[in-house]
Image (tube, rainbow over all chains, first blue to last red; front, side):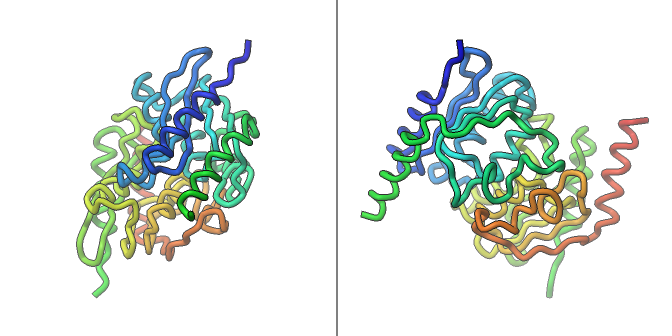
Length: 148
Length: 148
């Protein structure tokens, strides 16, 4: 039976919001197991690369002692940017599931469209829109409060 | 007087080769000062994101306690991939100087051409070909030895 890990990614996104970070969360899974999960921590860590996807990929690789996450899936609440998309390719993740589309900053279905170039060297299966409304609503609330 | 930090980036690339890593090196500078320097460590760290550029950016940001490297420059021996190009944009680096072109895996002048999309949000000044022959020769030697 197919199991979605988007609910867990959403928990990580909500935790990021509670820390004052842009609410994006990510999970790396292998079969029915979560290898790693993370929320965005760019402010806390003063690290522009500390997106949820990068932190989850790094943690999963550390856990496996491997640069590659063959056969694994990444679940993330927002369309990855070009940085995270290429990191997904470097890690050879088999599948990418994401929630909300990001026409403004996305690099998968928008902008750089990283997986559409031979220079990327790997193209995961991509599934978009999973719990997209819940994922997008978290971001809307976060930015509305900051503007308020 | 303009000072090039590519010689220091090349030292980092050679050190990476000596560790058995793909020989790419990077330096982040502010004016005449080196803020951080790094070589590729993807194997040693089992981290597909541990490219020289990412490690140098993270170290420079940690040193400044900031997510952004306003007014700083990145020097790297090889054309950055899409991951590193978007990280350069996230860090708001003012200038990117790189050595060898990378038609096979590059994301600046090839493939995703990350800085050409509005979704990237920042476009550094880009200077390519600085000590390009020396930078490319290091890579050629490294891969020739591995094939030999």
